[in-house]
Image 1: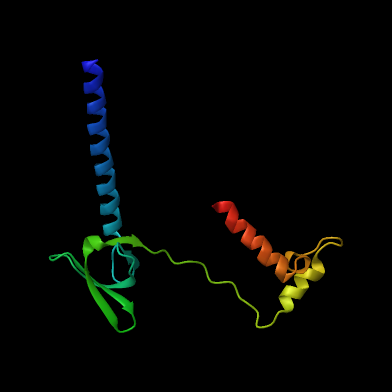
Image 2 (image 1 turned 120 degrees about the vertical axis):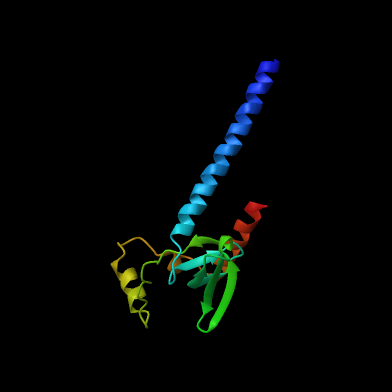
Amino acid sequence: MTILLFVMLGLFVFMMFRRNKKTQQQQATLQSKFAPGVDVMTSFGLFGRIVSMDEAENKVVLELSPGTEATVHRQAVTKIIEPTEAAPVVPDDASSLTAAEAEAPAGTETPASSETPDETIARLNGEDKKDS
């Protein structure tokens, strides 16, 4: 029984060290990608672009919006924001919406035309009660 207890304790300590080492490697990989012009997020949810870095004092200057800068500790920057795809083009009129309804097979209705506003409200209120 005592041997089993020591094995479990040893396994627990091993897993702790392994997790810490993996976290340190991920943080080192992330910090190696820091450079001016990279979009990042801080640990407290602040988004910005790196303007400059001070390696000696572990400081990073972030541009939060044009003309607004903030200096944070290098370890506060926790995530690099990858550029996203271009936003889909939204037409100025509703012609694309009516075209989708015209292309629907006969006998099928779109959800917007099959439900009245009162029915929609009743359905949504009923879904809220399911979660409780």
